[in-house]
Length: 227
Image (tube, rainbow, N blue to C red; front, side, top):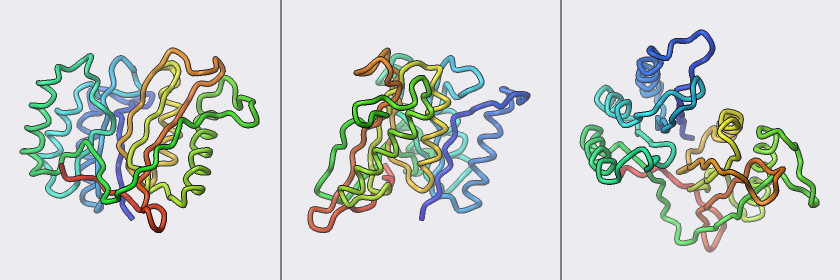
């Protein structure tokens, strides 16, 4: 079993935003001491108190310099509207050097077969469940995803890529909390996308996945790459 620490820089009421980055560095160091396999943060902008990490590569670099074993992950795709692609590639290359190859933006599998699971939403028997409740809809969507995995003879550890579509930035925290409830011992390459609307106006969350499958006996677990 692998243990992963995922952080978004959330700042609880009464906490200091200026101290939070230092706390996250100390938490990452402690995670390595506790034999965690991986530590990761994601990039966010203008989401006050929910997530304070707008320059994740800086924290990645500090953690890389102060640790020696734990893998360092980017937990979502880089937001290119805020980053030049060439500069992003240069920063990632520098992080790879500082971390001695521990920085990872991908998940790899030695399986020759990938299953693509279509978007799962909180709809059953044609009815939208948990109308107006992004957290409730996320739970139903993940539950539906779990049912599909079982039909494929797959486990959550077989999921190598996950994409979540969320209507409205105000629902980010609720959906993120549900994701962390499910992502206990697995850490797929994940992306969260804010959209204006989904296929029905009542639907607030949609989750799709790519799963690594064994052609002969079902699913196989995936592992973080060292790239």
